Amino acid sequence: MKYNTYIEQKFIIPELKGISAKTIEEHLKLYSGYVKHTNLILQKVDELSKTPEDTTANLYLIGELKRRLGFEFGGVRNHEYYFEQFEGGFKEINTESSLYKKIVETWGSYEQWLLEFKNLAMTRGIGWAFLYMDEKNNNLVNTWVGEQHDGHLTGLKPVLALDMWEHSYMLDVVPSEKKKYVEAFFENVNWVVVEGRG
Image (tube, rainbow, N blue to C red; front, side):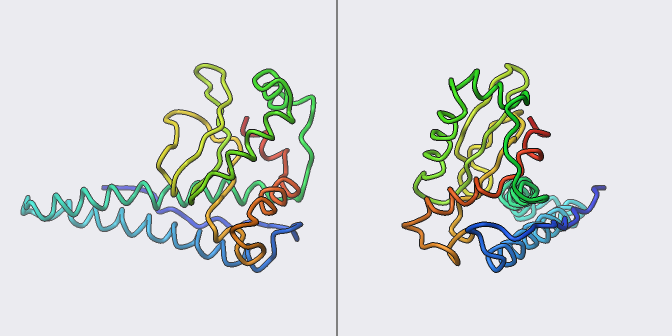
């Protein structure tokens, strides 16, 4: 099997409001681990696939590694979307952008979309709040993604990603006050980056 090794991206993240440099530093280490484990899984699958014995054990191991790949790879891409949104510092959404207009068309107002998205982010448990663009039907969709992979909508383009695992905010606020983290997130989003995806 020939594949390109996944490379850990480097992000230039300025000082953020309500999200400490220490939190970002530790969070980036977790992202690094997802990159490392994605590559390890692909390497191990390649090794097992070259074994001449077509054993049940090998097939089982390959199957379980492939199952795990969704989690690890999701951890890579989700975090890349997340950290990219902070690069360049806070920039307000452009009310003339096609994304803003589509949000208003879909939800009636930007404020109504924002309320729904923030409520989604408060879903109990670990996971992600995502805004997607369904280019096939020209729809915007808010959805919850469990862990790193469970619930991604096939074929839809991620536009905005909010990490709601505790490691994203616990050094700054306790889990019972995670709403403060959600508010801080929106005080730091570079909407130029987000609009470039929509």
